[in-house]
Amino acid sequence: MSLFRKKNIEAMLQVSEHDGLRKVLGPLDLVLMGIGAIVGTGIFVLTGTGALTAGPALTVSFVIAAMACGFAALCYAEFASAIPVSGSIYTYSYATLGEIVAWMIGWDLLLEYGLATSAVSVGWSGYFQSLIAGFGVKLPAALTAAPGAVPGVETVVNLPAVLIMLAITWVVSYGVRESTRLNNVMVAIKVAVVLLFIAVGIWHVEPANWQPFAPFGFTGIFNAAALVFFAFIGFDAVTSAAEEVRNPRRDLPIGIIGSLAVCTLLYVIVAAIMTGIVPFAKFEGVDHPVSLALQYAGQNWVAGFVDLGAILGMTTVILVMTYGQTRIIFAMSRDGLLPEKLSEVHPVHATPFVATWAVGIVFATIAGFVPLNVLAELINIGTLAAFTLISIATLVLRRTQPDLPRAFRCPGVPVVPLLAVAFCVFLMLHLQMLTWIAFIVWLLLGMAIYFLYSRRNAVLHNHGGDAQG
Image (cartoon, rainbow, N blue to C red; front, side, top):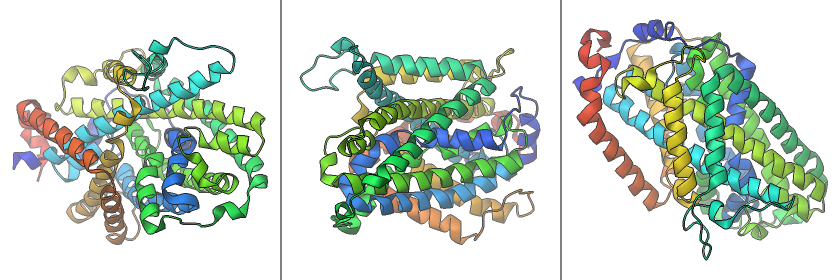
């Protein structure tokens, strides 16, 4: 039964009040943090790949992916308002489903968030190299990509990807207030760029390009939904900021649901305009579909702004996902499941300094030496698994602790959480078998670490009285 020992929620709330993290974030910071994490690679890169899979019906694929996220977001919001503690779904699982489940989902999140930062850093590098090439500056080929990433070209390391990861790590380690200020400015700019694309592109739409609307039928729509689900990854990172929010019970649900709603609307509109300007088949092999649409429409000056927006967009994704991962590691270390050093708070910056730099160095190295196609394999399935668990945990908490104060209550329980589970599992079944195999291998590795280290070093192992149930 010790595998399913649970943390006492009241004890968790008391500990979070005395861990040295500064409560400086408000609802606008959280909405912009969510948008910062979501609007990036998905809208600037994956829209082209999604269009090749679903055709103009990509808009429907985005809606399906958003529904899976939306149902899960309502569950996240209830947990965040009831248990405003660092660690996101890891912490919520520890309080409801037990230690072994919490460890596995935390291990899952370490992979998801970490590889997301590495993958986006590689995408950032591509746009950055394209931007400086416009000024006649080119890096040596050996420093432009990971080994073997470019057929026929001898590459050694993706230097820009490494440098942007280390730069973001420095910002996140310096302080949460400074990180959110930088994020807010960049989010404002990149949303302005997306709105500029909408304002200019809508006048160049040819409705004939939307026919046939779903050339690959429902199969294409569902496969594209599983693919573009990556575009919504990030809103859950808002919950990792719980202990640095001034009024978490009210503001966390606003940040979660608000950022997801804004981004869904932007995605659907951009996808519709993009496929209305360019016949979907022309996105084959294109990694900058939004700017291509503007070039296709003869609006090259706007396309340049879109490239700049893509760079800023990816920068904020790296920042928020790095921030979220460090807070999950902080929570797991505080619980004894990871080494204690990782939960030390810097006396000046009030951040988990060691954890932040550990994350930055490890995933900067991965970004520099591992090709993008390899990095992307596990991100979606890890997130879908996390969303499935948060939905199940919502049902468990309603049954086991019905009187726990909740500033926000997920509507339509049990229907909404069950719909979240159904949508997430459905999308997982549309992912490649290789992704499933790699995911299972990662989970088995996590299980080995749990039984060899984490179980006997857990705080609850030494203070069993803190557990409940």
